[in-house]
Length: 176
Image (cartoon, rainbow, N blue to C red):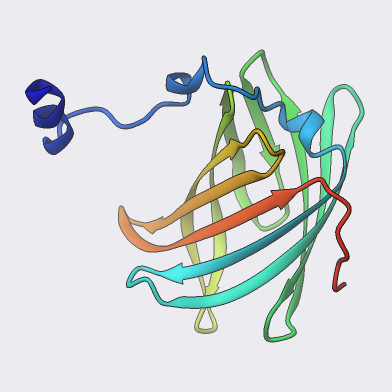
C-alpha cells in the first residue's frame, strides 16, 4: 500500500497507458460506436476551472471497412457554429490514425478494453489568435452506452484547459 502511494506521489512514475484498460468492459470499438448518428454535449474549461464554452455536437459516422468518416457539426451556446470532418483509419488491432483539416499532422490513437486515447495537435482560436495546442483525449465507454470523453489541452507542457464531452447513441432531439 505504501509503495503504491509513494509511486503515486512521485513525478517519476509513468502515467496511465491505454493498455492499462485491456481487461475493462464493455469493449469500445470506435468504428462501431461512431457508425451512424451520435449526439454529444460538452464544455470547455480554462486552466482555472472556469467554463468558457458550452456546446452540443451532431455526428454522422460512416465506416466503410477501412476508414471511419466522422462529420461533426458543433453548436455553441453563444450561437457560433463549427464543423470538423475526421478521416480515421484503423492501422492494427489497437491503433488508429486520423486527419482533419484543422488538425496539424496526424492524430494517433490506441484502444484497449473500454478506453480510447487520442492525441493530436490543433490550431485553436484563443482571443482571436490561432495557437497550436496539444490535445490528449481519453474516452471511456460505459455499460449504459454513454461514452465519456475528457481532453487535456496543453501548450509547451502548460495546461490551457480541459474539454469534457458525453456521447450518446440514443435517439435524442438535436437543437440543430
